[in-house]
Length: 200
Image (cartoon, rainbow, N blue to C red; front, side, top):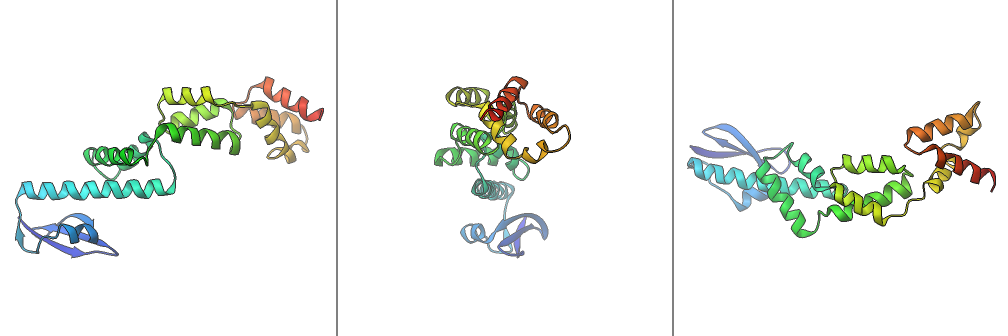
């Protein structure tokens, strides 16, 4: 098999075998692993090169995704598997764990804080969101154990903020109660929140 390359858009480098396109890498990788056009390459050498390309692609994808926001291990794995093979994905995840860029416990605490204090979510919705993000059940249980959640206070914040205008509508209070129950808050806490607001 004869290897050759074409320059693509931006930093992309397209690799060909016997004139047929096979895989894309970037100019940095190619500068480090350059093989002169027209060089004969056997199957083992080609497979080793492809592995290195996929490993780099997986690590770059991790950096890209983690620069946007924190991820759970499962979330990151699921996203990586859309573009790279399982071996490269697991290798990149191991590297992110080693570097401390991936930490399910730390992520669970940050997420909990965001969902409670910024999103004002109910306990049941927080659990759903955490499971959806692929966090292990034992970590979710630990984080709930160490976090104090004042559901009544959160409901009061929602009534005074997000649902304030809705209260002025016809049957406003009933509509707000229904909306809060759909968000997973229990009726007792909703009733207590209204009572406290009405008596403040």
